[in-house]
Each structure stands twice: as structure tokens, then as C-alpha cells.
Image (cartoon, rainbow, N blue to C red; front, side, top):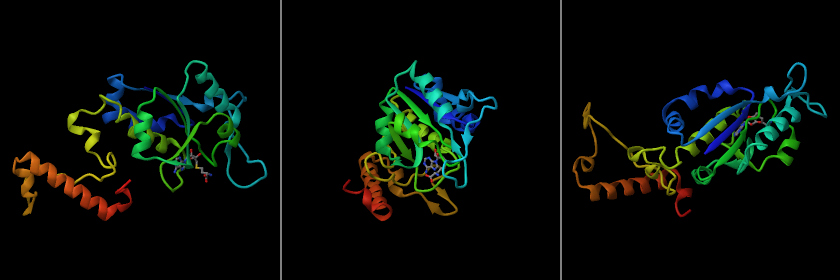
Amino acid sequence: MQIDILTLFPEMFDGPLSLSILRRAQEKELVKIRLHNIRDYSTSKHKNVDDYPFGGKAGMVMMIEPIANCIESLQSKTSYDEVIYMSPDGELLTQGLANQLSLMHNLLIICGHYKGIDERIREHFITMEISIGDYVLSGGELAAAALTDATVRLIPGVLNDETSALSDSFQDNLLSPPVYTRPAEFRGWKVPDILLSGNDKEIAKWRYEKSLERTSQRRPGLLGK
Ligand code: SAH
């Protein structure tokens, strides 16, 4: 898979992309993630990327030209399955959506900033708009990093058996059961006996029951989906 991310602040991805699972996925060449600085595609003398909104009002808007130049330059070399804009008014990111995206070959993700991007980019280039929740971030970078992480860890081969995504929350519309590790007792607080029993069948049953219990307590809306 190849993911191209368009941003005004490529440095914001330094941490998320260079550690842990995203790092390993790139090292194993299961994903190639490229960052593109939108400012490099500005043709103005001072490399402007934002301007005042037509009709007045506070805040700046990301200009159409640098973003259009950047998208078209990338599209001349790669055919994208989706051109995604991170936006609070987009479709809510879910495990199901991450699953779908993990099956794609080439994704282009645009991070907005300030008041957002010129609407004409959305009308003429964007094929999908994704929100990571009903709150407003300063920019699309953290949202794009979350989307990239949720998607890439589902590419076959990225996770090993021990960290398999299949047992994670939401994968089957159930929340994860509680997990424990050594020591079996800490300050008198004990791990449930069943987990120490060695009885795989009973452990699986316990985990399933705990998943159901947790889901009906915390996210009943997931049940029966
Ligand atoms: N004025 C816009 C918000 C702009 S926030 C509005 O009210 O809808 C600046 C940028 O941050 C956006 O262009 C978008 O790319 C990103 N962003 C903010 N909140 C987000 C969210 N919940 N999910 C995804 N991207 C978000």
C-alpha cells in the first residue's frame, strides 16, 4: 500500500510514523508513506498557502492553487483509490472504514489547517471525507495520523499473532475483554482464577462473556449491528 499525505506541517508526523507498529510496517515494506509539503507547490513569490475568506469573517482559508498543483502532480504518477480530506463534517472513522481502506492500494490524504480548505478542492478532487470525532482539531495532521495508524495495522502481515487485530475492540462489534499480565497478585489484587487455569476452552468462554458484558454496559449500540 502507498499513502501520500499532503500537509503544511510534515514534522507533525515524525513521531507517529517513526515508532512502533507504523515503523515496522514501513521497514517490512508493507506500506510506503510519503509526506508532501503543500507549501512547496505554491507558485507565489512568498510561497503563500492561505488567504482571507471571501465575504469576510475571521480566520484564514487554505488556497486552492497549491493544493490542486500538489494533487495533480501526484495523480500524474499514481492512480488513487481514494482522495481523502480529513474534516470534522466527514464520515466518522470506524473500525469498519479502517478495514475497507486497509484493502486499498493507493490513498491520498489531505490535511487542512486554519478554517479549512477552499471548497472547490472538495468539489473537484476529493472522493471521501473522514472525521475522527465530533470535535475540532487545529489541523488534519493528528486525524490523518490516527487514520493511517488504524488502517495500516490492519494490512495483513503488519501485526503478528500476539497483537492480532482480530481480538481488538470493534473488530466484531464487541469491546475487548479485560487483560492482565504478571504478577498474578499485586497488593492483594488478584488476576481472575480462570486465566491461570490453563483451560483454553473455559478461558475463551470467559473472554467472550466479558466482552459481551462490557459491550452491553458501555456501548450497547454496538450489539446487534
Ligand atoms: N472550520 C472547520 C474546521 C477547521 S479545523 C469546521 O468548522 O468544520 C482545521 C482542519 O483540521 C480541517 O481543515 C481538518 O482538516 C482538520 N480537522 C479538524 N477537526 C477534525 C476532525 N474532527 N476530524 C478530521 N479532521 C479534522
